[in-house]
Amino acid sequence: MIEAAPHAIHALELGRMANFIYVIHDRATDRAAVVDPAWDVPGILALTERHGLRITDILITHSHFDHINGVEALVNRTDAQLHLLRAEAAFWDRHTDRPTLHEGGDRIQLGQTEIEILHTPGHTPGSACYRVGDQVLTGDTLFVFGCGRCDLRGGDPEQMHQSLRRLSERLPGGTVIRPGHNYGITPTSTMAAQLAGNPFLHFDDCPGFVEYRMHLHDREEPYRPEPRANRHSHRVIPNRRA
Ligand SMILES: [Fe+2]
Image (cartoon, rainbow, N blue to C red; front, side, top):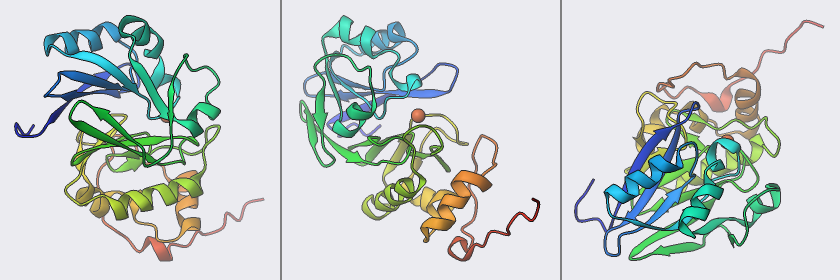
């Protein structure tokens, strides 16, 4: 944590699926935004109380149960404003009342801290990453040396390929990655380390990525770095069994 930064990001690992719940803390106002509240709302409230924070905003990376099962309880306890992408609200049939619906590129002002919303479809249609200074909260889009699955309802591996490419092109190498699950050998990483060692960022061609994501990827957690192979020339040997 850099003391000079206008914000701090606190992380909690909660639940049976190793979810990371993040609290973005604006130092100037002691306002807090909770990202993907789930599993243990009293634990989230205890963290914010310990730091003397007021929860004013709730940010959703996507609407899967393991990321949102604390939203309703937290809204009721805090009256915080809920934010998500319009595309995810259309996909999610049971969100709470009065969310603020965003488009990719929108910014949320948390006191003196600006949070940029990136639309990164692929895991779900309205998956979002939240960029705060030199850090990015990537939900189930980008994991440390992994990426979110695309075989669930609303998933689309071609969109995931595009989303990961855009993140790769857009985010400087020093950007700190904070994923939605603790699936890698470290809880956080940098964009440079991911470009070097995350196999999902090594495909220039979309069909190769889709084949790897949907059929070939069988690594066990924790995900480790893999050297960049010539993924763009990767060829799938057809299964010759009937
Ligand atoms: Fe998910």
